Length: 443
Image (cartoon, rainbow, N blue to C red; front, side, top):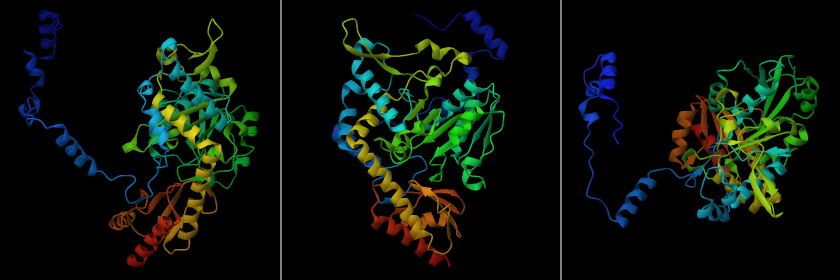
């Protein structure tokens, strides 16, 4: 079948564009790019090909090689072997939400169990089958809150330091709405959470636990004030941290989102991730994404289906609550297996180790000259921002020569240091000694 179209119509379009023949459309492209010579060899046998790809792989710096304190949204945690084993089973290797429930019971059940586990950790009533990543879930929450409560006004307060990437994604999601986002910092304000001023036109308030600098704010009683003022409360929290603090549901949050990469998903050069999304009962019908539900068939046998929304709802353009109609099914499965293998005690052990390591570093680094820790007396989870009297770029180059990656540069003189349960105190001591030695060299 010829799909080239009517020749007369094609000539009409070319004439309108000021061209005679189709090749004129590509005249601006150099021939060497339009018809490049692709050097292909005669091929490799399997053994040689494996060696070639291994050489390419070895050129990358492994997250498990050297001593690395990188974070900023990507964290290296220990992953039990059973996570890889189960998630690599052929029957589970799909990221898509199944629409044919009668042939997808295993996948639907795993999503239902994932939702149940997240509900227990967060204390929230309703959880969806996941989003692409934490940033997507974060932005979807803002759009949902705005639409659900815009009669109050278009203002949404963000009382936390968030990453530049989160801001950019949020701006993209809300660019065609009347929502106004105001960024504030609980730790830079004289008022604590109980004294925050809540404007009358505020539709929602968002807090991150922890924030981008690893600080955990005390937001008790904030939910009651938001409820009295008719303001939706959103908490973006680390799922591991929630195992050792009061969960969002008990705090009275209306919406919870989180990044699930820490639940059994390796760093993988930046992805894939897992977006966690949960809401209170009153927002159930507005939750974006998919929901797996439990039911019984005509014979009374237990079964699983997609519940509460149809596929078509998500393609209604501007009238849809969300245009996301898929999920991270395989990553949700990994999170489910990880949480099952670790158990509540295991999750709490990891979280407490992350807190201990962060404060171990704070205790050691604050003794050094030329270094300042951002809010050293606040509770820190996994990360801390360190400001130096010297260039961070120089520090990074010196640290690389010592086999250490001390963190992620924030600006010319600041670095974000991240530590998880995989770091022993001997490695933390080496990082402290690195800062001390470099400072002495600079002096």
